Structures are given as structure tokens and as C-alpha cells.
Length: 132
Ligand SMILES: [Zn+2]
Ligand SMILES: [Zn+2]
Image 1 (cartoon, protein in one colour):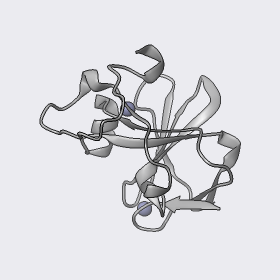
Image 2 (image 1 turned 180 degrees about the vertical axis):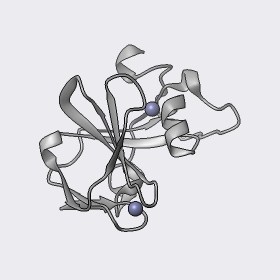
Image 3 (image 1 turned 60 degrees about the vertical axis):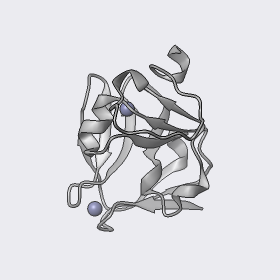
Image 4 (image 1 turned 90 degrees about the horizontal axis):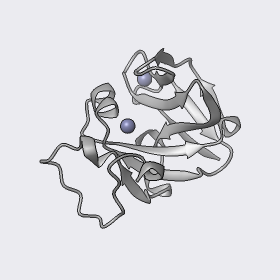
């Protein structure tokens, strides 16, 4: 079982299947909602995600987007599109073992903060991987 949760422990979750994708998002919306230069995400089957403790709060950061977070400590937990229930993204860094699923690429370099450099050699896309 793959488990994770927020910083304060109020929210815990479990994944019953490994993620379909692991990536790092440089978009400005992820940056603002997290207060961090980038956010690492795992894409999972919504049926594989179970909230096992607590009840996350919700924030609609863009049209048709629902983000869940802990309303006590602020940890960002998930990203979902309300018009596409085929996947949900879970923050890699909220896993108990964030090294378990290394990222395969970077997305949204068009929004990047220039002073933060990675140098990990992974493919980097100006938008999402599908958009090039
Ligand atoms: Zn919390
Ligand atoms: Zn993003």
C-alpha cells in the first residue's frame, strides 16, 4: 500500500495502485497555490485513491479545476479536472516515500521562474507533455 498525507497529520490517504505518470509542474497556478517554485505530481486512477483520515478542503484554482488541501496546515494534496474524471493528480511530496516514483519530465516551462535550475536532464515541455 502506498500512503501519504499532510504535514499536520489531519489528512491521510492511500493509493491502491501505482501512479500512471510522475512529473514536475512549473505552471504559475501550482506555484501560487503551493507557495513553491514547482510542484511534483503523480497521476493516478481516481478509483485507486482513498482518503483514509480527515476531510480535505477544496479550492477551484481555475475553471473546471478542483484542488484539495488540508485546511489546518495547508498542504496541497490533489488536483482534479471536474470535466475529466479519468485521472486525479496527487502531490508527490505528500507521499510518505516521495522517492518511490521519480519524475519522468517537467511541464509548463513557459511559466518557469528563471532563477530556479534543476539540471536533472529530464525532458522539459513548454506546456503539458501532450501539447509539446
Ligand atoms: Zn494538515
Ligand atoms: Zn501546474
